[in-house]
Image (cartoon, rainbow, N blue to C red; front, top):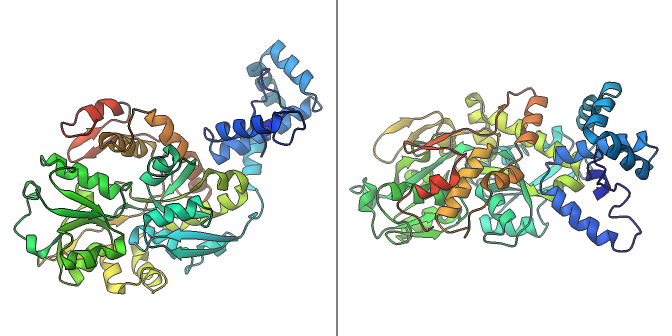
Length: 461
């Protein structure tokens, strides 16, 4: 896709003759830089729509860009757009083309996943045929941890990947890795995490007693890290000085708890339930009790994946969202548990996975809890959730300066793509992308991220 297809065809200031394939001296480098700049502000759907507009307008002027620019300067782009709309069904043309993009340009895909229940839609889509349904031969590849998933995605070894919701934000900003524009068009799961303590700490149910203890989280740029920090800070502990937080890959959480290297962890499942299953620890708190409906994991990819392979991107997003919606029905959870339990996926007892997905589970304290939404699946990537994550990255010093929080969230979290696919598949999608959220009784207003950060007594900024 060249710059000339992404330029505004209704502007007399835009030269549609030049692009990445132009022979003019110096044009190629300028075009590539402009494409990169333009692409970071558009979703994949918006790029296709702009290309359609450009093709239609250029054809009206017989591809004579001098005449087009002169006419736009004389009558104005807005006036011409209105005239064109009265004689040509531009919106219908966009919809028709977007709905009929054709077969995937690349059917054979490698998709990374970390073996946790948060990745349920990405994993189950292979054995249950969701990828095949949309013309894809996708291989899901078990990955040891998040740093590996990030690096394999950056290197191109993975076409797309299961990621933690903060990761594509951090990667786009260059926090913790080289900066590379990433997109997150779908959330995988909401809720689904817990704080586990070793059985030696049955007498420490009050977090203010946790001073000096060591906790594991799966990655620095994770909801687990930010929720643990938020939780202990609300009880008066500074997470950087009063406790120690270590990054431990999820599959190693239980072994480290057993060995005494960790006093507890805030981890994805099934490793919370596995600690109870093995009689090592107990569930102190489900993270849904910190923030009901919080996001955790997501489907993410480099921006270039969507721009260079739009048909493949659309087919893959349909498969992921379809699988996510299937997983959201509690009636399907036992079937899904059996599908994702084998060694090449989660490598866990079906009974452990069922306890997580059905929400009927032993808590390690002698009780059987019944929490149907212990984990749930909702693909919509709310921009307000992205803004909250960015405020916590700023609060704890993972980004050094204030940024345009909303702009970054909107660039990375492709709510418009998710909405279109959800509606195409017959699912209900939100019409708004921002809402307030309540975390431990405190309301987060995404319209005032800086004020929200400044409201906390314990913070790095």
